[in-house]
Length: 154
Image (tube, rainbow, N blue to C red; front, side):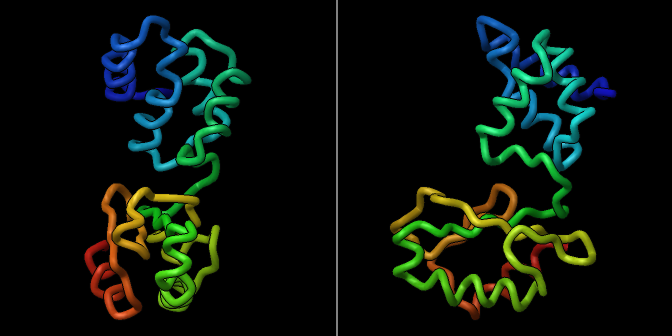
């Protein structure tokens, strides 16, 4: 069931849209911020709250690739795999992350701390290669910077 805090946040954002249904992505992002991912049951609750069908909301959730429909770790690492990042050292960055975390792309560490995901573009080509952990962007990365960055996420 949606918490009172989630409901209040969704209601506040709904005021910015002419129709409640238009707040679908934002409503999902609000709930995901509290729960880390959107289960089928949660999706149904949000849809009901917005007055739309679960199928309509699921279409939005599956289109927007930052709505997580499976459990993720406490911190989500998005590794940019755009052309600029490939040219500037994506392979080394990815291998260091996979080795350090002992996971492959799409997996979560055994302690539930990190989920490692590819991302088509993080919009920071001038700082390539880049990754984002939660809402923090890190650029001009090399293998030596990874350990220091990961240490900041307990």
